[in-house]
Image (cartoon, rainbow, N blue to C red; front, side, top):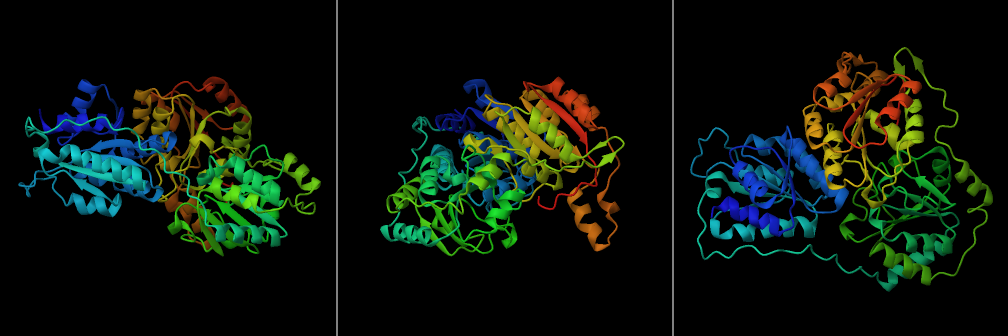
Amino acid sequence: MKVYQVLADALVAHGVDTVFGLLGDANMFLVSDLVDRHGVRFVAARNENAAVMMADGYARATGRCAVATVTQGPGLAVAGAALTIARQARTPLVLVAGDTPPGDPGHVQNFPQQPFALATAGRVVPVVDAAGAVRDVAAAFRLARSTSGPVVLNVPMDLQDEDVAEDVPPPVAVAEPRPPAPLAPHANDVAMLAQRLRSAQRPVVLAGRGAQGAEAAVRELADRSGAVLATTLMGAGLFADHPYCLGVAGGLARPLTRRVLGEADLVLAFGAGLNRWTADHGRLFARAEVVCVDTDGAALGARWPVDAGVVGDAAAVAAAVSAALPPTQRPQWRSAELAREVAAADPFAGLVPLRAADRIDPRAFLRVCARRLPTRRTTVVGVGHFGGWPNLLLDSPATDRALIAPWDFGSIGVGLPFAVGAAVGRPDRPVVAFEGDGSLLTGLGELDTLARTGAAVLLIVLDDAAYGAEVRKLRPRGVDPSLARFPERDLAAVARALGVPAWTVTDEAGADAAFDAVLPVTGPALLHVRVHPGAVQEHF
């Protein structure tokens, strides 16, 4: 048996049934063995960076540790941005990277892979001998799962082809690790939170992605203390049916949410990675004390200053504080009028769309989306000026990992590959992905990947024939934005040429007609939406 076969056995023992990647000299026999002998699904991308992004999307949609593989040298180097995104997002992911033979420093694809892996992924496990291959695979998965983040498993090409001694024990099946027991809060912290809630006049309970699973306890605390509720974008939908849920807080907050949060004197956040966008650079709840609850003490105040922090499980902390509080009524804060405003809030109220020949106002298009898109879906939003519109105007619940926003490194070109990975991981619901023209053009080849997988992905390309963010920033400074503008391209024709059915949208009637054609989403489809470049989104 060869080392690459032992590696394949070990990967499967850790529950791997899907691998994303690109073949090359240093991983092709491993992939072939995974497919032929173990029946593992191999999703072949057209670019290594996209392959790792697909694995990241798969992990975010499923909660499982994802696996990707690339070849040596440029194969790993091209994946650097994706590894950095996964590191910033703390995505559990193992990247099996081939490497050049250590004894051949003159190899054309040789470069220092381990320092590169440390600079991007942050962690690397080198496989240095045949006897330790099983141990090293286990170490990579243990690191990725226990500390949440990508790990590069670095395997030289010549080592993979070595024979394994007969006395080396085979890998054994490894169960997914159990989640840790809930972290109980300290009694002093519970008393401090209860006192702050008693003293506040206008409290807000804010929940992020880390509060998923604690909805009932957090809701009970808000009701008991007379607080209104809000969520981060990544916690959207947690309290959607609550009469005093203001929706998403942050730079993408809607007018009613901005007004109420501006009056708050206490914001108590559960499982929310507070940052400059959550606080809208200090404009959103400028007059409030901010107190955070998180299981990770290092996260408290790491990206935005807080007045106090509590380490503990969201549900356990909320329940303990509720038990320490008497029921409190705040009719001037939780008023009947506020409940009516929440119920009647319409993100499209007062919209007067911009008009132009063969161009649709993106807000008018999103109004059609709000009416036509399936409620049960995974929503993926890429990075760029275009991304502000769906995030602001669509209700895209993040519960059950149904919203994926891979903005962790600010890299464009993420929408399509993350959508493919999410669709492969969660085939039980369609994916609707929003991408920009400039962003899509960085990785057009992945339209071919989408076509080959047959995944149920509706890719909506909001095309302003520009890098819209750069245009928005250059023009007010009196700088000619023409460097950020590009000729119009027929992206629908490109998609069709690569095997993806596509439609072009230039007005609301055309949008409805396109949705008539593509809904329900059962396979790949692309809407090329030519949007009016004059619509400016200040928060994106």
